[in-house]
Image (cartoon, rainbow, N blue to C red; front, side, top):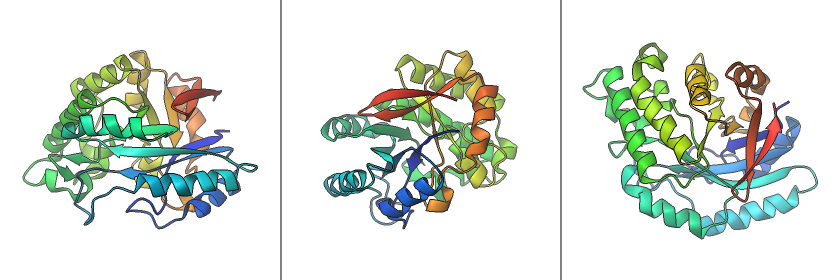
Amino acid sequence: MIKADVHMHTDFSHDSDSTPEEMAEGAIEKGLEIICFTDHFDKDNMDWGAEDIFDPEKYFEKMVQIREQYRDRLRIRIGVELGLQPHLGSYYEEFVKKYPFDFVIGSVHSAERTDIAQKKVFAGRTDGEAYRIIFQEMLEDVKAFSGFDVFGHVDYVARYGREKEKEYSYQKYADEIDAILRLLIDKGCGIELNMSGIKYGLPFAHPHTDVLKRYRELGGELITVGADGHRPEHIAYDFHKVKDILEGCGFTYYAEFEERKPHFYKI
C-alpha cells in the first residue's frame, strides 16, 4: 500500500474550501500514514482575481498547529506547490530559502503570462501548437529555477485542449519532454506521479506512462505520489493503481520528503 499522499490543497489555495483539519481526517480515514500539504503559491497569476498566493507566516502558524494536533495519528509535512514562470526564478530562489518547507513542488500552471486553465493560450491555435508552446516554456521555467524537489504533473496541459488527450502523446512532443526530463535529472530534481489526470477524466495519470518510462530510461529514479486532492474525498485517489503503474515503468521505490530530504519506500 502507498502510505504517503504528498500533493494536496486546503483553503489556503484559491481552488479549495477544505480546511487542513478536514484533509487530515480524510487522510486518516483512507489509512494513510504520511501527508504533505502543498498549497498553491502562484506568484504573478492574477487570472482568478486576487493573486494566487497565501501568507506564508499564517500558513506555517496553522500547519505547525495541525502537525502537532495530529502527531499521534498522522505524520504531516508542510509543503508548497510553486507556480513556475520564467521571470520568477530569482524570486522563488529567495522564497524557498526563507521558509522551512519540508517539500517543494515546482509546477507549470501558466504560459505566456496567463493561466493555462483559462485557455487563453489556446486562442487562435490548434491544440498541438499550444501544447508545444507550453512544453517549450516549461523547459524555460526549469532553466530559470530548479530549487524544487519534484516537478509537478508534467503533462497537465492535456486537460485543457479542445481535444484533450487525443492531440497529446509523448511521441509528438518527445524533443521538448526529453529536454525537460534530462534537465530535471541533471539538476537532481524528481517528478511526481499525480493521479488527478484520471480524476479529471483523462485515461492516464500525470504523466502518461510513456513519459514515466522515458524518465526511468534516462536515469530518473526520484518519484513521489500524490492525488492533488482539493477535497477529502479526493485524497489517495485511485492509489490502488499506483503500484502497477510504477512497477510497470521500472520503479521499485517512491519517496516523500521531510526537511527537503527524501525518504524512500518500497512500492
